[in-house]
Length: 173
Image (cartoon, rainbow, N blue to C red; front, side, top):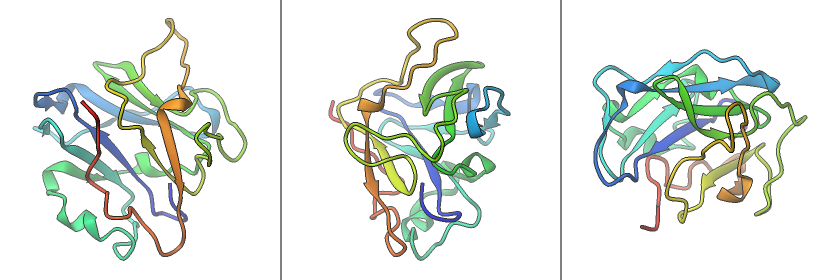
């Protein structure tokens, strides 16, 4: 979550094997919405263990995120799923079932959520902690509890983008 259109979403595969992304979609839940329009991965997309897939805003500043140019076209996609502003939830779905979430679906927190590690979801780069080994799971059908303790926020500034980490993620196995 950067200023203006400098936004991206990374999906990381830490499963130990390649994943066929044809059954997965991502969705943006804007301003407390609970309805969504799924965004599919490009046809034939596969994500090898240790790789990330990057959804990025088409107006992202290449000066702030030069590493975007180094990510293979097969692992990135310009998408409206990046039209978030710190108070929106994002979901990862498999076969239409929500399996991971960032934010709280159906809740508008105002301008952002505050994370226990410090920082907020507005104008911060928010990364899942390296010790988290699986996606979020619901505590019950229809219950969408976001575990904020799994995330760390780092403030962004006008001249700092991904810090050279766009397209990568560290996970302790």
